[in-house]
Image 1 (cartoon, helix red, strand yellow):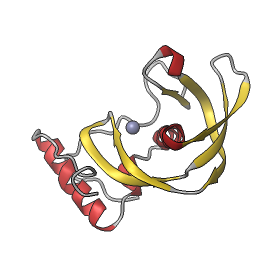
Image 2: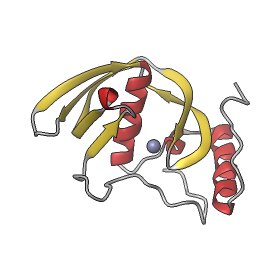
Image 3: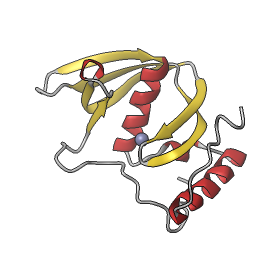
Image 4: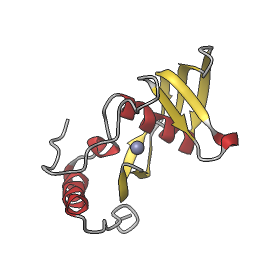
Length: 139
Ligand SMILES: [Zn+2]
């Protein structure tokens, strides 16, 4: 796990007040909403690199490798088990949210120069200065 920049904003990963300890909500519109309680990654296949950001780190994006396709087992809001197969953006979002439940941010997946750029971005964000986009500027 990479070191966190001192004074960096507190992660908003992990349990949220009012939510069971392992619940993730995905989607902005009610018809897109996926609620996964205690999600488990069953299968993953392939890899895709794409820009990723997080509401916990406003204005910061970086390219992150994620599985191209996944299968997840979880419980729904009523406690009924279900499986979800996802690819592309939804697979990325599910992996991102599962990481949050395990205390991991997308920045923890970065290495080398991307990790160093992210450290500078996090310091800038912690100082109150606006973040500069990283992923789009360096394709
Ligand atoms: Zn996030």
